[in-house]
Image 1 (cartoon, rainbow, N blue to C red):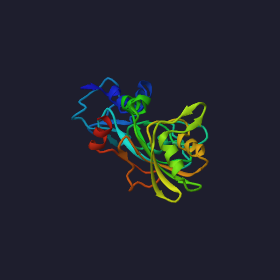
Image 2: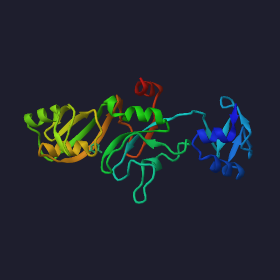
Image 3: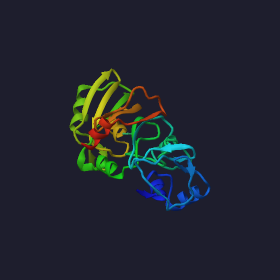
Image 4: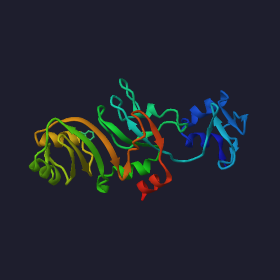
Length: 232
Ligand code: URA
């Protein structure tokens, strides 16, 4: 059993004071009855709590994959552009944040969650989580370019990239797998070999693959297996 305001906070409906306001305004029902008292005790496993008519399934943490469209930023808030968090505003779990960043013009897989510990783990530089990008290039890569990209290249600022994997998919198209997440890393790697990225799409992260059924801007919850794999 836990207090209704705590339950709602854990579901990311808002801060304690925002939740109190929502309760006062009658936005919350428990088993079909409007409840306005923050201290009301709910059984998170049995009671049916709804916020603005939408049933909340009690789960401390949730995990979604989003196929990020170009033009939105990988942030929770932005004064100018739309954000990935806004794209997932109707999940019923409040504000979810992106695990890592993609450039505004980059498309593809972004993990969205409210699980800070998992996010921290996946982003920790020491973990070397693999990220694979589908990269369209301005021109073809020579064997020497591929060798250099795989060995590590100088991307400026005295930085050398860690070994990477290149899979050639076409004349001007590759899969590039890296284990770091430096600012504009893929674009800078291609520039280091005298090339240029024409389009960039992340297709996997930490073994999690972008679901091909998701159109740009669409998202779905991860399966239990996918969450287990990321945590494993
Ligand atoms: N590398 C880039 O250059 N941009 C991204 O968005 C991701 C990786």
